[in-house]
Image 1 (cartoon, rainbow, N blue to C red):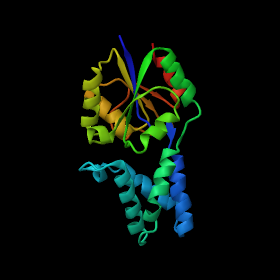
Image 2: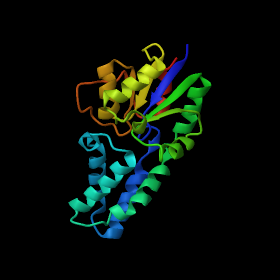
Image 3: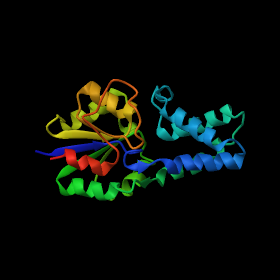
Image 4: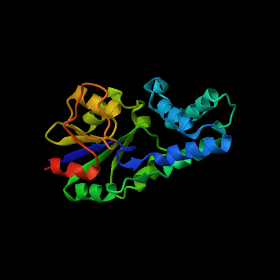
Length: 218
């Protein structure tokens, strides 16, 4: 029996600080509050209302930068650095324990599947930094962003997941833990920041780093 591990990418495997630091750098260059710019960029990115109807991730990012301009009373200041922000996203790096842990998963015979709110002009660069083989699925493939159940069901049907052959591993509570609970998926929450759950849904297990997942696998 093939054993599957599915993963969220950003925040679980790759540290998104590279993108957010770029937003802060641009804010300093433009002359607006760096921390506020970072906060507003993340808030827009996390707001699912900005993802319906479906748009590709690069356009979502550009709209985010346009929205930043609007919020700061600017015109075409953040947006002009759209290419640089996308490049920062391509250059994200793994958390310290990730590569070694992923290799251990592979050595144990698990098939790794990535489920990412990303697009194909970005994700190949991200996947390459992880150094292990993945099946990669993006929002672009299914025209839906997590936590839309359409994304999860598409992957479930493709691989015939059940709770004997599959565990989902993710950092996102709203984007991953909640839909997993709705679908009855086994889920391990990589709660790196020790956040309080925003709702009543709970994962099968909660860890702070990816290597702590090992204790819950066969």
